[in-house]
Image (cartoon, rainbow over the protein chains, first blue to last red):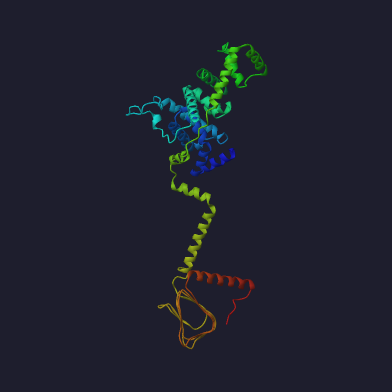
Length: 187
Length: 215
């Protein structure tokens, strides 16, 4: 895996732009997942994760080949997501009324070709609820929890991505877990 | 709520398996007697399970194309360089083809120019203005004749072969040719002819003898 990634990076550095598509394919789901869980919105997630790949492409010369590429890439994605959260306008919710309409909310804008089976609805609502809970966490705990429990990364890797000592990563995970516990314990 | 603040920290360390065996044993002992701490640990475990139960999201299908479209456009030379690096054989073949075609065309059109030339010995004369080689009446050519970039009119006699490259052969009623008459006007047959004559020369050099006088 690492050898394959290094080979692709060498090709991109030599000027083969098309080889970069292979890198995107390898990491797009993970990068998208980080941005989506950080931002809680598909449009912003797509925008930020694509931006992360663009930054990776234009700054490829500053990537240290002796380090793990994914760590470097996830770091770009996390930083961009945190920047976006800081700049974020007041939250946008599906329940918000659509501008210029009376009782049309964003749910009714989502195309529904067929009735969802009930268990799917339940599952969908469950996912929505968990995402909301994650989104309520302060960003510094959110990133640590996402990297630990959704990306399954080691504390050392999380530390490298967030540019923090492992001890600080531990504290953030502890605080994040504690904050989530308080919200979820009565569910 | 857990009993003491220090114990909460202990519970997290316990979850992370980040404590010594002794600490672990002591905490497990404590959990048996303290329902508050035991409850707290259970809630933390449940929290982790809930977070982990979120399905993995996937990037939208057109994601990669979207990134590639937003990449800075590469300059033309870069694209060429990359392409050439990827296809060295095509490049080699193209260079070879180019050299081959230029050398062939320079032989064909340039080389001797459009000047008429004759290879062979005997009493013929060259009419430069009309680009014609004339073998006059009563004259006999013993060997072969090769005419380039011109025509040949045979009024006398030729005992060998006649080859006309890039021209025509006119045989007068009185004229006589003992050997074969070849007209080479197509590029391909000219190439074939050149190759044949080159090969026969090589063979002759290897045989260590002069080109045979075919008659």
